[in-house]
Image (cartoon, rainbow, N blue to C red; front, top):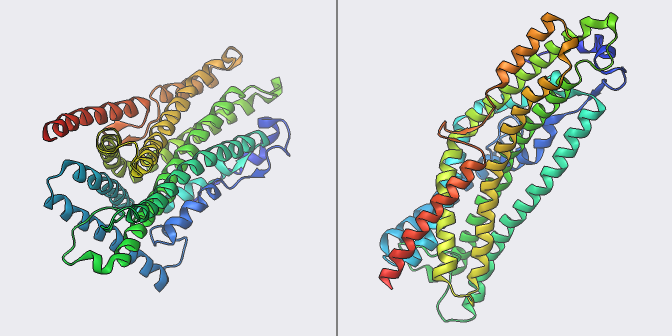
Length: 407
């Protein structure tokens, strides 16, 4: 059930100086419409798209493509001892493992997903001032530009996976596929069917993983970060436009900030519960994929290879995916730390003892920064990003030694 904060209307003159500046409703949840649609057409987002027979068929298709392709590449890895071929196929299969893990975790928690939408529709978040609306819109536009770059890289990977084998076919008599696999039949007899199927598998994974799950989590994290940014502004302006005869307004403002803080913390906690286990597997897979992609580019492929461009874009795409998680998680942590500084910046000497105690309550709660964890193991911050990159380099060094010994 949505909570109502109608008392804001009764005291908006004391809170922001003019009534017109506070009578604005901004639908924060509209920022998530694209991701809801992307997951909804696959039948993976609740309550947004009616589960028609076509949607159910689409869901089965995604499952079939994803798990079928993993079975094919797994059989190939088991049947070969060539380290360069294993690494080429394994980097794609690890990407698939990360995607499937996030998808299964999301479906496991899917009953809690509508609660996020309900929390964003609470009046305490949607009723904003002109300045706060500017912050929301400006942040959303900036983040959307970053996500467009990430999605463009994903699209580039899909296109190159489809184009490069066709180029290689013109240079040799042997038929080339987007990625090798082992089939219980002669794949050359069904070359075009398998070729199109593999490209579709890459496209479906990129669409659901990048456009759906990755962007959805990133936007939820950004929304939480803006909540704490706005809260800092509310705290810093506790004494703005307050006359001596309106001291009761300060106490109401502090109570409003406490409620706002509690709701923001609850929102972050719910985001953490829904996505955290999938993020842990994604981090482990990302460390392996970055290592294998670097191994392919630096040791296996020559500079004349047409696949070098594919590996370069793939590497950049995986790095961007990892940065999306860690950077925005770090920004959330830093913004939540700013609440204590905002409390210090208030002219608390002009507050009553009761108001000072209420302010101290906020400061004590804000001593521990708000973070999102990967299954309670890793914090999403820049330190974790560097740890993953160090691990990737360690794996790369081991692979390089093994590869040099087998040459």
